[in-house]
Length: 387
Ligand SMILES: *Cc1c(COP(=O)(O)O)cnc(C)c1O
Image (cartoon, rainbow, N blue to C red; front, side):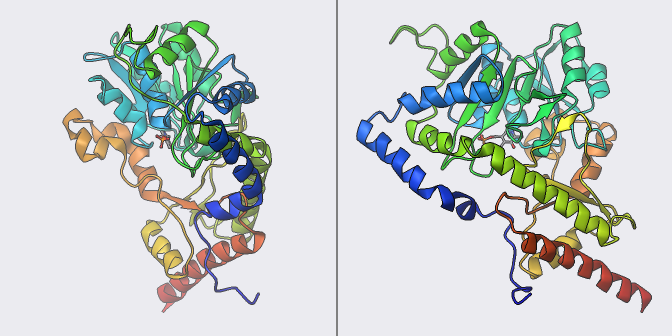
């Protein structure tokens, strides 16, 4: 391998997008020529295509995944005194949507074997002030959403699925975003369906909920200049919708590429013996889940995760830590005074997790280089330990 020393990027958006360049230009040119930069026909088309893809009756575009989480909570009238159950091992937006409305996040620990929120923990955390539950389908694998919906349904508590990383994922063959009252998606460029800027989508089977989400996303205005509620301005623009429609046609292929890459990593890492020695723990698989691999998250169980990451970085291999600081340990959430003893698995995951490059156009050769580089780190470590 002549280029064995070349680096491997964590993500190469340009490489993924290049084959679609002509289609993007054509679709975007149509938007330029139409002059309909908001509420263009591509937005409506994308909404019905996403609804079809996720097997729900309604999909409503909005400005970001963060707004897709905020709007359902606004539509539910959640505010001060209300509690919303959410994992701490997630991206900030899963939690800020709660505090922004003056409500209180109640953190539940994750299952150590999936990185996803523990349904039994949810059951224990429910009080008479619980107004919603936000499970996160982290890294592209669904939380145990059947159990979660059952626990929530017994008490009539709405479930808002944070499916920002999980478009196309499923649990027991039922798509992410079709289980709860509302499913929330993000089109941030690094997501599996990534746009060329910000964008988001909400899915729901309930027509009344869909109507309320649209109302809140459009200044609460209906009819024009008459405001029923204090909504926000949150729109998916036509340029993004046009780009996303091109990408949606390839999404199943892209997911398949991610799955192929994930299988290959797991095979290569197992062959390297790093797995058997428990230095590297492969990403957990829930047999009921259809995993779409937004992230390939290994655990480094020997306390040397940061040293390994530095070694990879020295050799030009991209990696990332999602997430290094759990939400209950963030400065802005200190006031919640969360008992850290209840967040043991969350804190352990944040110390051990390491995310490797997994984007669809990642080559087999690049994956070999990533695994070789991890192998060399441990070989060097073994030598220095023996010396
Ligand atoms: C990306 C992401 C969001 C927020 O989406 P944006 O489009 O960036 O606002 C929310 N939750 C999770 C789990 C995410 O990964």
